[in-house]
Amino acid sequence: MAGQTIAIAGCGPAGLAAALMLYADGHAVTLFDQFDEPAPVGSGLMIQPTGMAVLAQLGLAGEVARRGSRIRGLKGLEEHGRTALDAHYDKLALPGSFGIGIHRASLFSVLYEAVQREGIAVHTGRAIIDSSLSATGRRLIFSDGSTSDEFDLVVDASGWQTVFDSTPKGILPFGALWASLPLKPDDPFDLGLLEQRYRRAGQMVGVLPIGTRGDAHQPEAAFFWSLKVADYPAWQDTPLDAWKADVLALWPETAPLLERITSRNQLTFARYAHRTAKRPVAERMIAIGDSWHSASPQLGQGANMALLDAWSLRRGLAEGRTLGEALRLAKSWRRDHVDIYQWVTAFFTPLYQSDGGIEPWLRDRILAPLSQIWPISRIQALLMSGMFGWPLASLDLPPPDYSALPEPAKASETSAIASSLSHS
Image: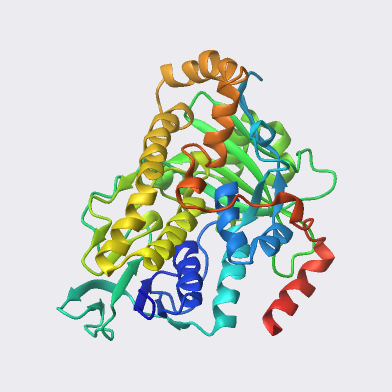
């Protein structure tokens, strides 16, 4: 299957990683993005062992580790101080493993700079509205009425708002306000933890260390506050200080971060969807990442699942005897893992983001105590890390070697790293 012409719609982690792998395997790859200049959307995310395994195969795990922050576990307390979530990577049978908190811009830069170094074609400002299929290939149709050249394969990596699939988007009732804020040495946060505080399941505030990026002179944290989509217009009309008072009432230690929020423009509201495409594979087309399956960020798996999808597509094209067989293989290797996490995320999300009363009671009084007992503690760590369901073994993908990863970059080194990459 070498030498295919492949169009990839979307310059997110799924599209960029797929482009790098398929180009390395000898395919003629072209990326399309609707924005005039490709850029990340959002603040922070977690790179799990599954995602690091793929990045290691791309030779990019070290650079991601340098730009991010090592996270040894997740810690969540309800409003009265009771532990609601306590999960750590040392419960995994993967020596030295940890998560990596990283700004989306940092992950994007590592992948996009690699695409640029390889000279992979990127067409910007192309809003895709559909595609057309012929006996010999598939073309993309753009909003201005023009069409692309014909391709052997179109990879839909355009995200959960994809135009190629009519499956209901499944917008979740809760979204979140996000901000990337500088961290100072005397801030009262553990830089090795993703910390959260909950008031029942209707309010949640969190802090995720995300390392350094660009020309930053100090490390940053992703700050997030859960908010119902329906309540966002009212929040926009609420005085900023009144909102800060609500946050402080739940987690007083966030005061130094809130002082650094001086304008609503620093906060971005993100909506989420829970959906699974009914047909992720069609003739000369495959959906990967959020175009195939999207969920709330509660388990922090989005980018990692996307990277696994890209790796599976690479393997499918390498092993399939025909294009149709290659796409079926790529889907089949990922289907079980996707189904597991779509179900698990649907189960866990109401425990942390809902208006219900029984869900937080169940979380705090039943699930949290049980999660500290073996083997439940091990299962929780597997779920958190994306390793539940043996996704690496099913893809013949070696686990990452955490002992080989470099330490996170010092703030003073960040500019030199970025400059070196841009000139390599």
